[in-house]
Amino acid sequence: MIMNRIKISGYMILVGISQFLLFMIISEILYPNYSIKYNYISDLGVGKTAIIFNTSIIMMGILVMIGSLLLKAYYYPLLFLIGLGATIVGIFPETTGLPHLIGALLAFLFGGISAILTSIRRNYFWTILGLITLISLILYVLKDYGTLGPGGMERMIVYPEIIWGISFSTYITNKVSP
Image 1: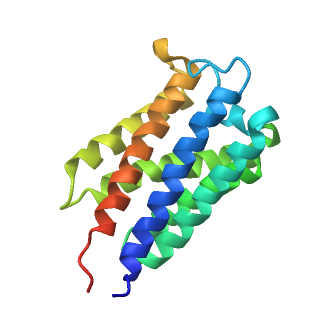
Image 2: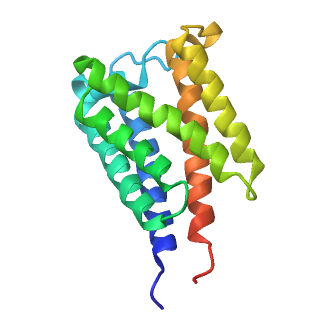
């Protein structure tokens, strides 16, 4: 039996996000004196861990973009923008300034919005994840990090998106073939 495009889309997104999560953790371990409280996630994209982090986030971005095109659902442009943002982050490390910030904003903002929109009639837990991402993004932009520090607040943006992305892609891989 041939897999349908929805299942293939789900697997592409699942592999992209999962490998990124794993390689981000590996990069955090290998990066000298890295602090999840004080270091930005994108710090992993420069120095000793740059090749691991940047390759991983570009791969995630590409797989999410292709997966979104295969999905052809009403929200696929939003998923595509998440992938595009991630790819831009990997191509333009934080040392490049504005291009990197634009990529991060695309990935962060549309990740939160996508979590909310895909939850309609499906999984309202995704709405909570999306709201956590968007509220954390607002606090992050306002530099209101609380006791989490800038790195911790950035993770409050990214981790809910990763949880949603793995949950969402798993959901669509289980869709019944048309």
